[in-house]
Amino acid sequence: MTTTVVSRDRLDRGRNLDPRVIFAFLAIYLLWGTTFFAIRIAVHEIPPLFAAGVRMFLAGVILLAFMGMRGAARPTRLEWRNLALMGSLMFVIDYGALFWAERYIPSGIAAVLSATVPLMTIAFEIFVFRLQPFRWGLIAAVLLGFAGVGILLLPDPRQSLPVIPCVAILLGTAAWCLGTVLSRRLVLPASRPVAAGGSMMIGGAVLLILSALLGELHPWPHASARAMFALAYLILFGSVLAFTAYVWLLGRMPASTVASYAYVNPVVAVALGYFAAGEPLTAHVVAGAALVLVSVYLILRKGRRPTRA
Image 1: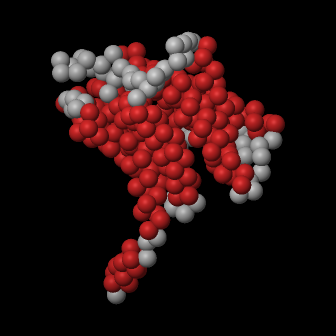
Image 2 (image 1 turned 45 degrees about the vertical axis):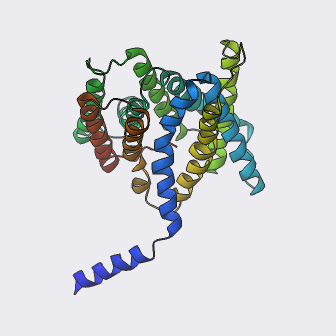
Image 3 (image 1 turned 60 degrees about the vertical axis):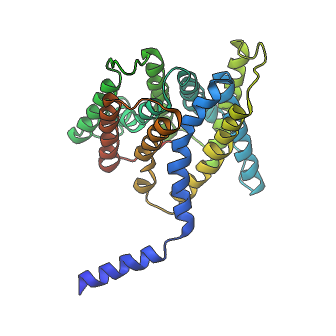
């Protein structure tokens, strides 16, 4: 009798599932997974720091304007200072490195390397900030993930990966994770979209300044309609729409369920790069990606759910 009641309850919940939940998950699974390919298209014609700056600055302005119209409180002076720190770590360093690196490495590899966010976040929490107790299960999962990264970087006759861009993505990811951990100790706006919009806007502004100082805009870049569409896609779909879906889901679903995007996005990115751009899918890529994704899955099950939005 109990089994029958439980089965009926699950069936009823399945029938009553809000279609908005399905579309929101599709947004964070597919839209975020496709952004790596869109970045690769954009940076082949648009200077990388300039492209990253335009994406973050405009997305941040749109989010702040939207939340302002909804009556959200403006950040205080202290909150702006903390948002500037977060924007520097999580958008200037991380996305600046990612956009630059995707000029030289396939988008699928970039996605797998970026998927090490949970690994590095757990490492910071355990060894640097002592926010989590030392647990062998989590340590083993982290080591498994970095073993996967090592396999990705092994010499492969079918695909020669430049090491420096790969290391740049890993360093950028470490900066993102540091910002994630620090954000738990900083005074930030109560509204997640306001906090994200403010840090994106500041990070984007800094990226645009760096782009100008480094001479990316001399001569002024001329981009095709394809590259401009990729950049517009990153702003509207990759940042504004997908992030809004992410925040909406966090208010309605368990964090562990929402965090599942961390091991879905790389699969989408690798598949899209292979089928749409002919990026090589070697044994090293498959084995390394598999270890990283298994590691991420174990961490999201065993530890606190670190997420990347």
